Length: 385
Image (cartoon, rainbow, N blue to C red; front, top):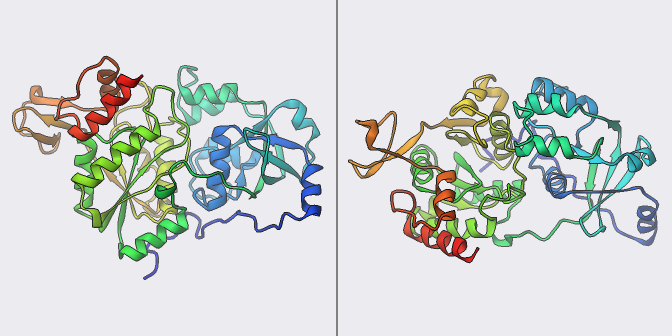
């Protein structure tokens, strides 16, 4: 059985170096200008290397950056919605020569990879944020990041020398490994579900609706850097595992993680999330209400409308668009605007934000919000805080 969907751009990028770290190579590394990676950059670096961000083979050059910011396309016309940048300070930038390697270092200062720098440039943070995040309000976490990052952007192809130990080893698979899993399971069509929250009843409802139409469901939570008030990944993983164990068909659901950082860029990030799941081998992608949103910066269905700006073959992966779903207090079941007999007063809206607010104030989560196993895990976490 072969893969039923090609990676974005046609092939999976592999930038994992096979270089033998002999004394001469180690000596060479010692001569290089060192560029430290922050947490987001380190996540992006590893995702590029394993092909999750195919067709990117490095951090964006000035031409790629401008093309993506302005047109949501790479210079070759391929759809790409989110800049993937590496920033450094002015003093380091002055030392870097074009078409020379730099050593990329982790938080401890250890060298984890190389980049051949082919571009050095600056970006207008206000223009970038307005076009990508649709706001320059510094209360937006993505905007705050862009404004406060170091001033010199450098781009070029990368080599990964050392991969970090994954936070969730048993749930971590590369795009190549995930595609192999789908082949092993015989899944020809797979829908991916992106989440940075525990799965509440509305999420469960729409994932099961989607599962009616495809062979398999990939629950693919994002476990990289998120906002400080988001529920930590280890707590969320316990919730996902409890749900999959009891409430989903085990032979039709896979749970693995995406070690990416959130941008909170709403409609543009929805495209970004979909393209990454295409690289992981998924044929369909769930787009619910306010996908990748934060605060009140985006309309409820703006992310879904963003997919309509492109021809289906340009995205490749099929979006599955879902209406806002509610618990119907009269029917005692989940409904949407399309399936509810009314009245609207009977609709109990569910959201990750509402769940966090209730937990933070010490309230128990009612069963119409989430399953009792999940509620127990979340209450233990918040009481521990």
